[in-house]
Image (cartoon, rainbow, N blue to C red; front, side, top):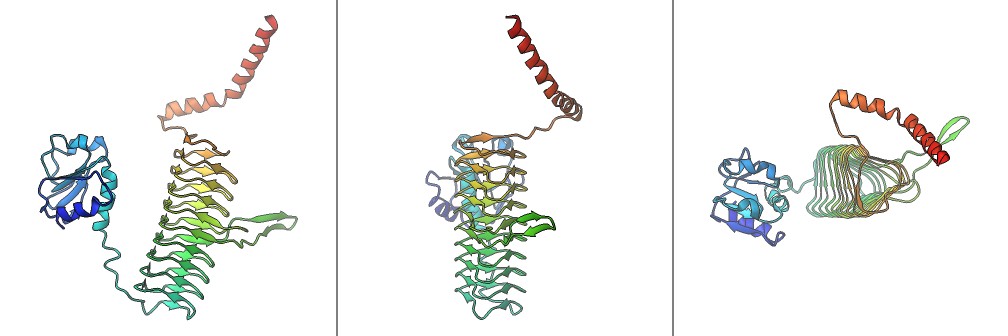
Length: 344
């Protein structure tokens, strides 16, 4: 692929993009800046990698105007190299182009299912009654789409995904291996005879351009629907409980657990390993750093944290001992304050 072709594609989305050097340069692969060779394109988005710019063998580098000063090689220059890189990566992603328009002979498809045009259905896929699959979608080996489910156009379902009954997926939804959409929510009523299961009769609705990482679970609603807004991206091993509402363009990182009936706003960023109690609300624009435990609603945009940063073991052990003394110290201070007030 010629550099001129790459530029023509990316500049449609990154308006400030500038091409420097030989536009007839041929690019065959993507590469990291430190390991690139001739015929490869790389990028720098972090100044920590500036050291590799002088020695890289990449045929083209995507970089910012500041880093481009003095660089004589072929380059795509923009204030947002990471965004440009994202669009470049699309040109080298052949996963969909390499799939034929076919339905594997081992797939089991109900007669009542409606399959759109140019759909790939892999080996041992099961599509149940009254399912609708939009055009240009891909469903890979071993996946199960249960009854009355709707998939929009251009969806990509990786192997061994389960989409349970009555769920609705918008256009261009991506579900990575092992994802479960619409499992029953965790609802039990205690009784003298033990826990009684509460039927979960809601659905899961995923809007357009939602991306769900491997082995994540989105539970169906207990009564109303669980909903994920347009453009939201969810990492691997994330649990979203029943009746959860997640806004648009929100990012949820891996190993986060969100209990039932939480409302997550638009443009929220949730770091890895975060725990969110049930019935919590996160305002638009909230950012929660990794390992934070959210026990109350966050009603103002901003950055929130509760995890303790790593330190050496000796310091950590000393800090733990001191933390255990906080209540005693608090009582001593309150007593001292009362004594001072009395003497005054």
